[in-house]
Amino acid sequence: MTIYDPAPGPRVIGPTLPSYDELMGCIRCGRCLPVCPTYQETQLETFSPRGRLNLLRAVEDGRLAITAGLEDHLYHCLDCRACNTVCPPGVRIGELIVRGRVAVEEKRPRPFLIRFLLRHMLTGAARAEILSRPLRILQALRLDRLGAALLGRLPGVGPRLRQLVEFAPRIGRPLRPELPLVTPAAREQRHRVAFFLGCMMNVALPDVSRATVRVLAAAGCQVITPAGQACCAAPQDDQAMLTLSREMARRNIAVFEPLLDQVEAIVSDCAGCSAALAEYAEWLHDDLAWAERARRFSAKVCDVTAWLDAIWPDDLPLRHGAVVATYHDPCHLANLQNVRSQPRRLLSRIAGLELRPLPDSHPVRCCGSAGIYNLTHTPMALTLLDRKMDDVAATGATLLVSANPGCLLQLEWGCRRSGQPWGRRQGQQVAVKHVVQVLDESL
Ligand code: SF4
Ligand code: SF4
Figure 1 (spheres, rainbow, N blue to C red):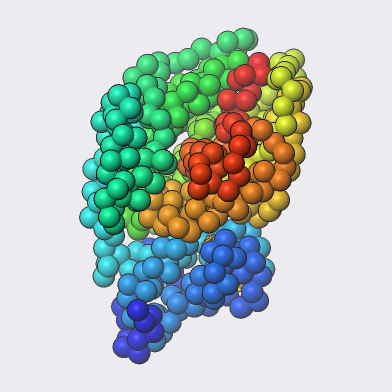
Figure 2: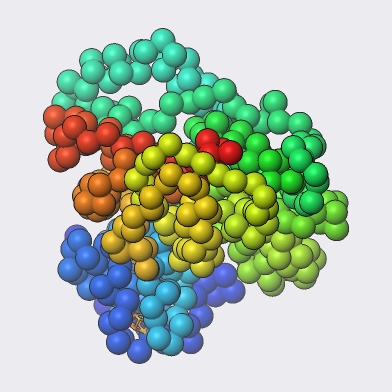
């Protein structure tokens, strides 16, 4: 399929789209190429940050039409923003690419299933619970793997189905229905925080969020969890559903607004959520009615790892059985929020835990999770995952720690793959945990 088409294409600039000046900000130095995971794998300019900006410029110049090829190149970007961290003139490449998708969306809408799920099902923790219930029942009856084994023989869809079952997280008992509005501090109260419960955390990793609330309480925080929270809207923003993502941002701001003067921070244990919540100020900066409200909201957002590092009481010791661990930086924590040293500092407080570095930690090399990327672009996601698991194996660690549900599920998939006959590192046993789980175990 050809990308280049001399016919003038629709504009890619506009109020919510990249401005031409921003696109022109690239000086073509090439610094972003070696840090871009998709360029590393393909060595193709059109799979690089600079190449994607050039494609958007070509559309704006009328040298390129919006075709399936252009769409493919823009959506092959992981939105990991490693490129942003090295660009000398400070071009916000990742944001420009994501906003460029909005122009594509008008002409080439995303697949119906993605739009349906993001518009009607993955809009908040309560709906995600409904969506995940059938899978939870199938898993409890062990019918998911049986079904995949039988259907996996079907030509065409079989291998894909088996892959999806292999990836699917174990759905647990959701946390939302049992989480009280106020969880008291477990020691002398020193802080009060609001807790943002991510939809994925609630259904796929509820025990991690249970640990988060316990650890916050143990560190002297009163935790307030307001009802009525929407999804953080990161997936909707990533898939160019701008109107919907802004609506959901307004809903979350309205839910937390009455608490803003009473809490020191709005804390999340999902790096993707905390990155999106912190971006609401930018998302709504041109909305007269909401810009100031969004600015106040975003100013309070703090990832749980940064918050705990800032307030951890010196008289609260941490001890773990002897273990060698390594830490994988979620892109949305390290590249977007510049939270790198805080989780490491927290882990280094734990007696008995030896922390070994992973290669390519600055800027972070994505594990291939990237929201729903691992489902929409599975071959590239698996290539990146296998590289990451090779890096993990080289550290000799048996505990792999991270701070984002997408990364945790992806890395768990990597461990499961390594135990399969088609895996590349047979016999390796690595436990994958969130930073707060390791802290919780070490209290
Ligand atoms: S956001 Fe990540 S994948 Fe996308 S262009 Fe930048 S470095 Fe490459
Ligand atoms: S680092 Fe920035 S200026 Fe240099 S090529 Fe990449 S986008 Fe352009």
